Length: 233
Image: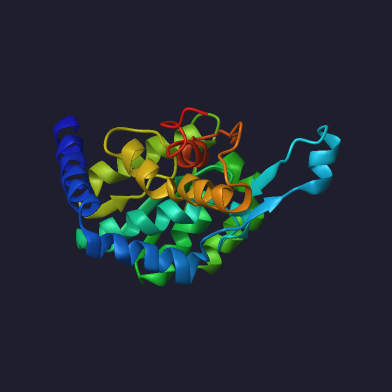
């Protein structure tokens, strides 16, 4: 089993390393970010919140205005284009709160690919609205009943399925798991920070004093922080 997983991961890593330097691939990726996702997302000056906070200017990067309502779609578009490059036709994914599941189901519908989402039984109960959206988009939602019936078990079940079905592509939504997934998620989410930096320079002519992001699986925060980490502000 370990050998098979390593072979799959090596295959994905080889393709990912190719596409990072492939201008045609990246042009296609940014094409879908613009025309399908709706990027660039706005940078909004929260004036009321700024006043409450004592006058510091607080800007909000409005990833909630992306198609599907979250940042997850950035990575989903990128990874499904990798899967397409590998001639994969069946996408699997895990989801907890459901945002990544909805994003994955959305891009699968866009590219006419089979979609299977693994989701803990307890999360399915709590996130019925997102489950309904996934099903409406044509995804099969598989309930995972092991353990606590939440995200951890959904990830385990998805990896088990990956081993048993060589032709699937596992589209991971968080900056977790074995290489190349954390690097791949960062690569397709860094557009958040890159846009924010450009927008701040246009609006304020300088970089922000602090950059703050929420952290769960890490895809949002690593996407925001990547282009700012190298700055000495």
